[in-house]
Length: 316
Image 1: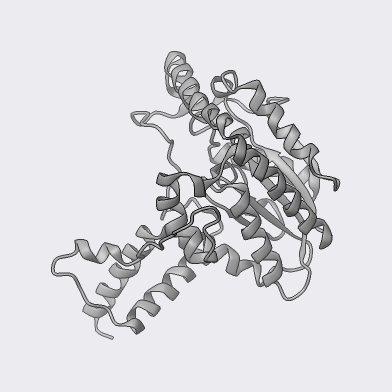
Image 2: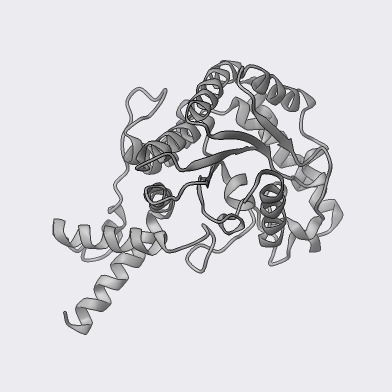
């Protein structure tokens, strides 16, 4: 292979990874589950899990969480992870969430299903939940922006796909040089701890109120009761310890979250007949502003602290 060919191929792989990062990351984690040894830890959840739970805190852990991942896709990830292993290997499963997740259903949101389900979950699971006419995104759509657009053979596409997946399989964290940890909001280069209190209050309130709107989705809440019950029953039938975790949020966010949202999470859990561990880090605040990237996501140092606490509480 000539240097020019290698250069072009390397660029293609880089573009493929950049444009399909979330799909490739989750696919690589599910692949990692195939080789998990006995006593492993499984993690599912939304962006709160991606930001808060580090695989390195355990002897062997696989973090199958993703941005905006709801309970339905948590369950699909866990089921595939568990069933893909040659023998029973997972000892515990963390189901990590924010309060609003109790009311979330990606498939009922037009914008989210077209952005997330089409490009991540439907290609992985061929399951669009409540989306009646799903469409899978085109992972090679970025080629249309190149002029002249290259024509890649199926063989070359497979080479790029395999190389991209291997690249992410070797990553121990979702956040790396390939995908730096950044806040949800523009903070003008400042950290969460550095911005003025007034701005922190405004951001916290705005973020909480956006999540509070989920409280209106009563139909999704009732369905999520069933999903969590089935999820936990599946885990317990395979002797996997279920642990539901609410990650730490900032004071500025917490003070504006509806109390009814927090109570709904307890109702969700009370509907599960099997024993289940529950820990809400916001009941006993244990972090400071430097441990956060934004209103409700942890920084690298915050993730190290929370992951260590979870490993101490439930075993590494």
